[in-house]
Length: 135
Image 1: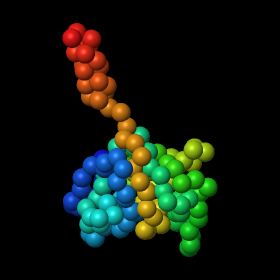
Image 2: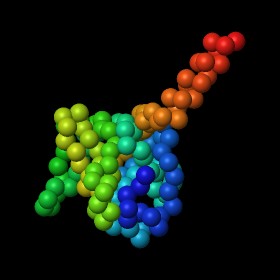
Image 3: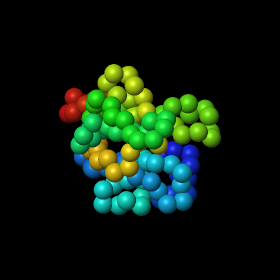
Image 4: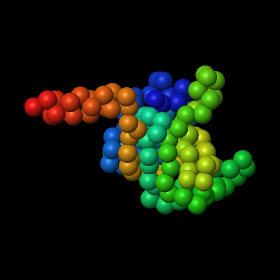
């Protein structure tokens, strides 16, 4: 759920509605998300999680300074998970552009809009519907 280089950092799953901030973590070379209230704990997101940022997203380019994408909404994804020793956490924007979370400018705030639907969620919903129909 969190990038490979964050294995030694305290972490927890993200929750719908919470505010996250892009940050650096002590003891890691990886930038990631933390809760605005718990900045030392990494918030791990599942692929498909939807985020809305307070402003258009800023990221570091290849050289100095930062650039901005023309969107404040993004979907969390993983890039090249088969390669163990590279950053995987990324954001995909409505125009198809994908950026590594590690390239985000520190201090940007985002709210978790929606978590992805899992197979377990679907099975639980179908099971509750079947129980309702049987009654």
